[in-house]
Each structure stands twice: as structure tokens, then as C-alpha cells.
Image (cartoon, rainbow over all chains, first blue to last red):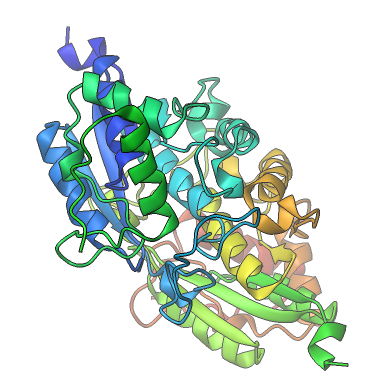
Length: 229
Length: 229
């Protein structure tokens, strides 16, 4: 019998940040053969793409792909339009301008396509609805709805198979994520969270992503390995 | 009052084929300001991208964008993997190898992103579940499910606004689509349907897309303007 039949495959959305590195470690611990997917979507913080590559190598994944996608031609977000500044004054109750319209729908759709080609039925995404920026596509309702869509959108779904969207960090605080990741051996020095990291992957320390990350390390009482400018 | 407030905007998925040219004409007739979206996704029949450009110019749309997306790095379809031949022996009861996993989910997700940036709440897609190849993402259940997803995935949805996915051709036969398009002034000579059209946009006449199209013109009793090799 082919050994590949014995292990389940999973597609992991790997942004290069803290959360996605943690879910990759979790998927490996659950004995999935891991296939990681990153996006070069015209984002301001393209240092995260190199970080994702390093993380994929560190975890010796089965395959790592980078899909190129010129979302900057649509714009509408501080992350994809150089004319919109990244906020550095802290989170408010509003959805911030770093929201990229339909980004997680696009990313999950592409992960779904690759999963179907691979014969994988499990997709991992590191969204979080606790210490987060209020993005609509990071909420439980979105994940549930996408899972339902996956099962009518695909040949596999029509054949009666089910896709499962795993979002294991949905209800975790950042410090809990970090503590768990440290236990699993994640090297957070490899990750980049900053929305405006420079080419060397050095973080600004002021944007929402930096604030959430720094507070997380402080609350977890773990040394923050982030390189700040 | 700004005149742009008086007209609604719509994003139209424009593949360059017969169906999508028809829905563009329908959206214009319904007085939408039309924004057309095409994809260069590594498809075998990239002549359709040039066709979409011609159709967009013909209809003088407000804006036409082409998103580049290397789906061929995933493969898994005769349209995105040069190693899988396009079938030329006619449709069977199986979903054919021209099915591109999750393609319409990806395309609608990107249309949704652009719609949100534009302030459009209407998206048109030319899927058809009558004279079609049995693709799962061309069925009414898929369209309904995506519409539900759109309203939890986006900032606009969270703010209580609703997206509407228009699929006006879902229940039409090909000859009905053609007759209606002719009435609306669609010049089908601009369109390319063939899965393996050459660079000049000439059709093979043998693939499923060619068969459905040719039969449609015959049944509609409209002269077929397709250029065959």
C-alpha cells in the first residue's frame, strides 16, 4: 500500500506571520502532510513572503507555493494602495483601512483549488477573532459560511466528500497562541507580522499588527524576537 | 448631486466568451455602470483575454481590469495543465477534465473585492446550468451560497448592505442566450469560446465549448460568426 494513502494532506495558508506559523506547527503535530500556500498580492509588507519561505523550509513541508496576484490593481486598502497610510495610532472600534476587501475569501478559494487538485480535504487558516483588527473575514461566521460554499463549489463536494476549514486560533488570545507555539517549537524569529516591514523584515513597532504581536509576547512572558527598525 | 450617485455600479466577470458578452449587454441595458474583470490565469486559451478586451472596448465600459493569477502552478485541469489534453469527443455524464478546481469561487471572490472597493453591490456572472459541461460551480446552489458568503465576508456586509450575484443565464439554453444577445446588439464575432483557441482566436470546432456554441447558433438560426482553424 502506498504510504501517502495513510497520511492525510492539508493545505495551510502561510502568510509568514506569527499566527500562520503556529497553525502550520499544529497541523504537523496532527500528522498532516502539509502543503503551504503564500500570496504575492502586491502587499506593502512583501517581506512576509520571504518569511513564509523560511518557515516552510524550517518545517520541511511537502510543497510550498507562492501565487502571484496583482490585488494592487484593485487597491482599496492601506496594504495594497501606496497612497493610503498604515495607521500607527492604535486600534479603534472601526474596521481599519488595513482591511483588504475579500482577501480571505480569495485566499481560501485558491487554497480550495489546490486542495482539490492534491486530494486534500483539510485547509488551515490562522484567523483570530479575539486580539484582532475587526476584519469581517476573520470571524467564525465567515469560516462556517466558506466551508459550506466549498462543499457545493467543487467536484469533490458534489461527489459527497467534505472539506473542512480549520481555524484553530479563532478563539485564542495572542499570548495563548504564542505560548502554544513555543511548546510546539515554533521559532518566531522567522516570522514577520508588521504591515510595513522593510525589505530586511524589520518591523515598525507602531502599526496594529506590531502592537498586537508585542503585547502578545509581553503577556505570554516570552522574549520578543522581533527585529524593530 | 453627483450624477454617479444616480447610477448603480456593477462588476461583470468577462471571460471573452459568448455568455459573458451577453450578460454585459444585459447589465448595460439595466442601466448599470459596468466594470469588467478578466483573468489571465495561465489558461490554455489565452486568446479569450484579448477577446474580453475587445468586448469591453465595444461596450465602452467604465473600466476593464485584467487580474494575473498563476493558477497553472496548481494545475489539475486540461485548461491549466499543458499535460492534460482537451477532450474532443463530446460531453459525457462525468464532470470533464476541463473543470478548473474552485475557479468560479476564485473569480467571484476577486470580483467581490473589486466591487467592495468601487462601492458596487451587484456582480454579474455568465454561468449556465442548462447547455453546460456539468461544472459544480455553474449551478444555482453555488451562486446562492456565494451570495450568502459575500454578505459575511465583507465590511459592506457587516454594515448591513447586501451583495447580489446576478446569474441571469443560469436557466437559459444556449440558443436562447444567443437570440437575446443578438437583440441587444452583441457582436458575437468578437467573442472566443474555444478551450484551445489559437493566438488569432480561431476555434478548434471539436472541444465541448465549441460544440455547445455551434449547436447554439444552429438552434438559434443565427449565422455562426466563429472563425474555425
